[in-house]
Image (cartoon, rainbow, N blue to C red; front, side):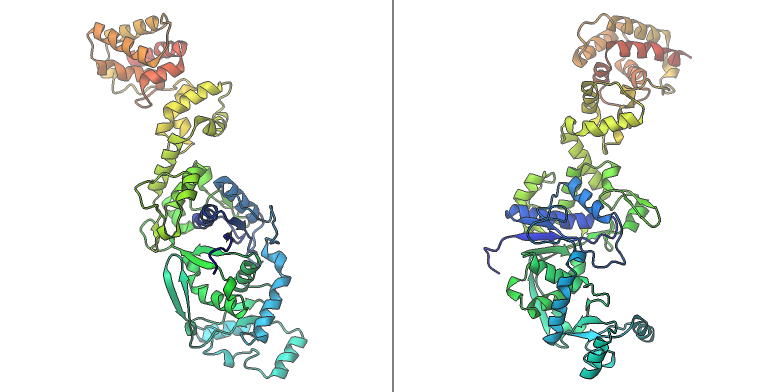
Length: 507
């Protein structure tokens, strides 16, 4: 293949349900490769299997890509010069190539009914349609030419199958795995065109990649066994020189490393495996997604990028521009990558810390609305967010970490401090509230100096008074620096809270 060939890659999901994080990673690696090489990233919807088509799934795929920032250059919603971008709309283009393969002796008509094939499977548990038995089955290879013509003329239902060589080797250079070879005798005669006239994945993907001038194919390693069929189709259709380069991505594995990560694993272990919430149209069951759990899209993309790829350094946090700049196929590993939800949460925590408050505020306002909190200035909310974001793993953690900034505590965790409470402490806090009211400047650093100075004057220990002060303001032994809390709450609110809380310490 010419090194001057324009880079054109495609993400080609089927609209059959939620988008697994492995699918998003495939889209991401396609996107990064295209952007790194100044190429084009295409979205193609592979909806030839109408029995598995799910209404709303295509819209869901688009929304996922938009949330992740992986905007296609060409798609059903943004067509370019290589459409249509849904396989179901390209139906008329496939039969001619299937017929061409039959005419050239590389494929054949198969007239076996579904019932007949099922009987064979019952009789032979490991039954497969292949060079070993095709002459014993009902197809244009085993039947007389006249019988085949009659069956076709009568409109008898049939499929078209590829005729896999009995004793050949198909080899190719994978960009990740190097030289890969397959014995064709071990591969069955895949259906290329179904009885309803729709192509199977095997035929459609080759015809479409050719028509769309795809230069590189990134797909999961589960498609590796299909590679010999696809390579033979490229060759036998006369397109060998236009064949794309292949890169079969490593699997995303279960946390224990045993097998491919599935939705069932997420359900069992309590984490999402879909990019966004997905509701099954038939059962109504909702499956949680990373977005709704509170992941930032930047963290989700960052986490996916380093599942199976690294830039050769110790760096772990990458924005999309850095990923595009540093991405190279030779840094993709061959081995599967174990999914670690704790690590995923770490990425989200790091991204929340480094993301500008203004980008998070709309989601924070939504949380406040859900809690019935209104009439708060953006400056106030932003100030609160700045204080607690270091403690947030998910956006939704904001309320747990910051509710006391918006509502007065309903209870006070005083059990640990009450046994040592005395009149001196009550007097101290009455006085401190009174003196706070006279302060002109209300800055955390000044408050700290003043408060600790008053403790020194009282002769009491800092530890005996700092914790009660925190409990008075927030209700418990948690939260960020207590003087920063006091600064954000404001002078009047702090004084009121001290006075309102004191009776809980003396009862």
